[in-house]
Image 1 (cartoon, one colour):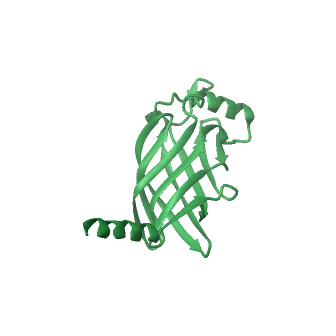
Image 2 (tube, helix red, strand yellow; image 1 turned 135 degrees about the vertical axis):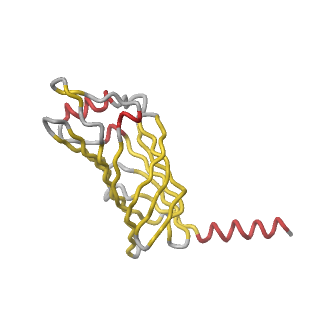
Image 3 (tube, one colour; image 1 turned 180 degrees about the vertical axis):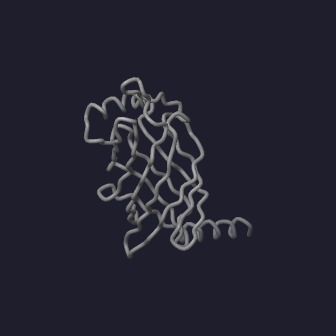
Length: 177
């Protein structure tokens, strides 16, 4: 009897869960960085990920992007970034959360950002909207590269600012296996 009830509970929970995949053709993650001489930004349009939705509210999220996929429109800068970030050793940056709260259209994600091989807790406020067959998750946050063991590059003997502003917009579609 207990096995039947437990099986019914898990089957019922599975039926109410929906898996959404990032639409890579319409999603991006970008960063802004700064140095006293100039500011720059880079964007990755090769974001991958999954969001599990239960009762129309996200319950888990996993997002990943290749470090080498970020394009600042300056190939020398991008090549140097791949070197500084040791992309051969740490090829991906990822975020995972299963502690999500929803209030109207605002999602608060408490999870773990893994960058340069260092996992650190990260809280992100984002916005969640849905429109028939697709959903959009967008927001921003800031990180300090030095907390992830990254040696800040310098130009003219001055290091870059120890702050990256990250912005994301993820379009999600229903996954049908």
